[in-house]
Length: 424
Ligand SMILES: [Zn+2]
Image (spheres, rainbow, N blue to C red):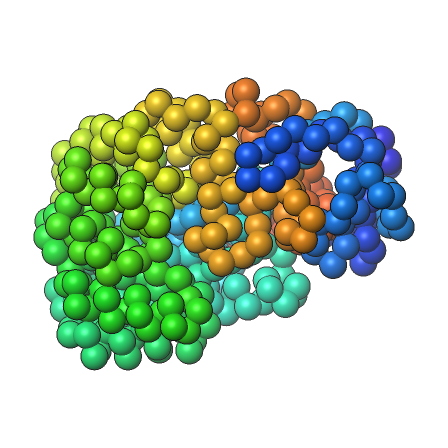
């Protein structure tokens, strides 16, 4: 295989720098339905997927009969967190440590085959800056659709870190401010949370406030994600016309019905609580609320799957003991909840481009060239996604040796200054 020769002779971040790539002899899972299509050639140039079997100029990569699938997307991450038991302590660390954490998280994502993420909130604009540098090609990472600071009410979820806005006028201003700073998605807190003090079911931003944010964001070409656990918060967010509901741990039948008939996508992040336990440094209040909610959360995610709600995969990675790269654990939770492996793959691919506003998650001419090369068919068994043979990021084949070395380098920095658990 041609690329194996190149691995030993090339030390940069991409195996085939600065040229078009011709993928040869693979089986692509194409279009929104992941239809199998064996091919002789597929050209990638300028970060764009070309036509099948038309030949073309470029450096050849022989897939030797392997599967070619869309790169995965994690639709809910926090690159400015480090999975620490008290995650928000990250924001007291130095700018250097926080920047390295963000770069490290980007490579952890790519190593796991995650070529796009939606970053749903930080204490400032660090991730917006990171996203801009990735977009410019200056640093290597997944495509990032970032929110900047979340918008919340006085005393609401993440009020100590987010942008506090009370009343539709203030919320409209806050929405404009985030988009002006580079946000392509706006994060709204429609209820309380599990990882911050207070009851996760209490209402946050009200219908008038949510509506003002959605109007303003959509007018400016940005999308809207609403954090909502309780039925009242979910219903208000749906009535306001948000693009995604995050979590929905306490959704009732009516809320799930409304979700199903809306254009809104659910991003469950149900695996976020999997590793929460007492005695490992997580604040007692968070442990208590997480363990009290966990079974209900899992059951309600399964009910959403059973009801046929449109789901896009997200993990809330960055939160306590929930490192970047664990998307497969989330997909396994959907399997346990009754989703087929085929639909689980779609939840992390074709369902994700529309909510990020990117031409990603689908193999078809004109889409962005974020792709994975796999030995087995993931529609049969999700385990096929665990060790991608190759990750193609923005049309270029990542050099795994470079990736591993750079991850080690960042990990050394973080070990000396940052208490970062190893990525999974
Ligand atoms: Zn989150």
